[in-house]
Length: 148
Ligand code: DQA
Image 1 (cartoon, rainbow, N blue to C red):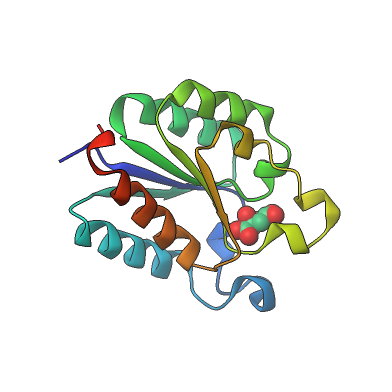
Image 2: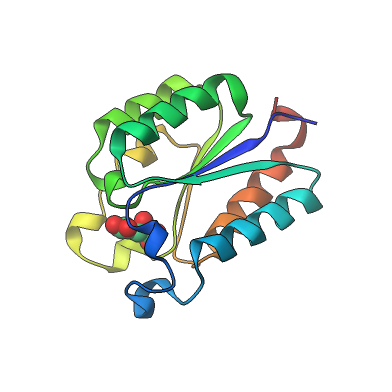
């Protein structure tokens, strides 16, 4: 079995299910964690799922993933639009990064259209709600033996 997939979540995603439900839906982050673990398991994969509101902690976790993860699924929240530090960490990771967003950031405010993370990502999945995470798991599973 490859190393686990790190699924990292940034600021305000701890409020999913309670925050702007017309945009983000009613599922909590814990619900998404459960669904992600089940989807990964169905492919014979493991996940490590975390959330923080702090940019530096996200950077630390991406660095930790260099030794401990086969791939990274990253919903950096608003830091996707601002954080060159996270982009640099993703580039240093050197293994597949899939950027995900629940909402379709391209049909919202103009400032959300720019994401730094996407420049360091293998692929980007946006707009499918919690399914965005599951599609990212499927995409990584389809890479199969390329995951180390
Ligand atoms: C988000 C989109 C970001 O623009 C926003 O700041 C979030 C959530 C999403 O999953 O749709 O916090 O990353």
